[in-house]
Image (cartoon, rainbow, N blue to C red; front, side):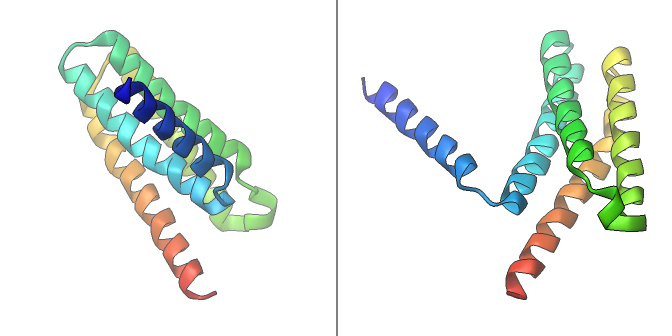
Length: 131
């Protein structure tokens, strides 16, 4: 029973943290998730766990598709266009990595995903500090 109560409380907390998060906080949650899922996908490739690698690579792809869908290129100008190209590159390489079950491709794109996460985290910190 205690585990159920804990599980329910945790799920309520997680749900509320998403429901009450700002757009910026949601973006950070997404890029953190992309970083986490890409690394799980890479480890699953190494472990020859096809289902787990596929599932986590697809989760990472879906996050980047969402980031692409919400990126306002018209408003963001050249910077947003460049970011869209990076997102597009990452999603295409994720597809390649998933098809080939390639640790090498994952090693190529995980640093990019981490850089994006770090950049968004830094931008968020700076925007909070300037308010």
